[in-house]
Image 1 (cartoon, rainbow, N blue to C red):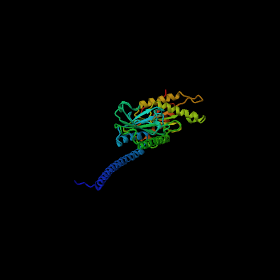
Image 2 (cartoon, rainbow, N blue to C red):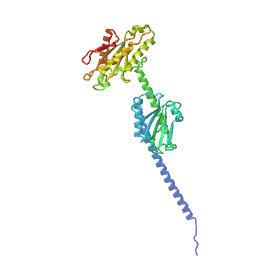
Image 3 (cartoon, one colour):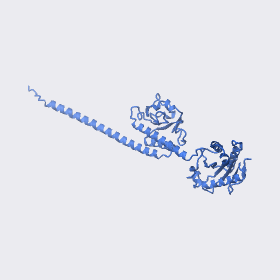
Image 4 (cartoon, one colour):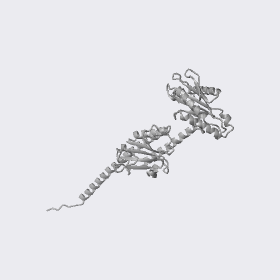
Length: 378
């Protein structure tokens, strides 16, 4: 019987095969890892490309409302989100801005301190997986389809002005273990851009606002002055123009403290605002002269407004007991005659001087084919 001689060759081959298999497994793992890294890199490249596009769109926004609307639209379409909503503090810098373009789905106003009370001011971003047992108090029944949500704190963390919520039906999209670097960057971009938009709008508003009365000033009128009325208010829109001037204002105010004259000016503005819409342009031309443009206002209605203003002002007195009175001129555009803004103001101004020549404390309508009659306060 012969013996098989083991010279160690089989053992060497076995070790070699196992080492080769190990290297092959390591190579496959390395290839898989590299493929995953490359996939993440491509995803991040696409993500930052979309982020760059979003920032470009945001920077083009002209005001806070336009900016918010742009953000909502771009986030939904560019980042495949199932939910985007602002919660803004009504007492903050943005609280007095008109955001009429945003629906209740897009924007919810919260009261002062609510963001801090909810604990959301403690950090820049919050990632949450949602379920019937674990929800977010500010969501509604209509949001029950969401699987996860990210909450981005906007503004100074000591006193944030809002929260931007972005959500997905995918429970893992904004799971707490996900990286939030991109979302933190987004929160800073949105917060800073909104604050700057509010500040720009505030400065722009101040530049065309009369410091004494809060009405528009002549600078507001300048870009519109030579425009046809249709360009400002719409084609075939009839416009009534009221031109008001306080009788003997300079003679009385020169002998009194400036605050008294300012009180009378504000009294006239307050009276005029009572009878018109908030978006009807009221402009302080100079001194005690004011223009009020009322698109869509009939002659009869404008006459009633003028008579009421005259009557209300005549119930007030100067400190020396003399009655305050105002003279008003009215002019109207005809739907078939698209006059320039400056022309209708000139006609109303001329009618106002007629009212003054007749003793003041009355209104007069400009004389042309679209007007008739005159009146006083009775």
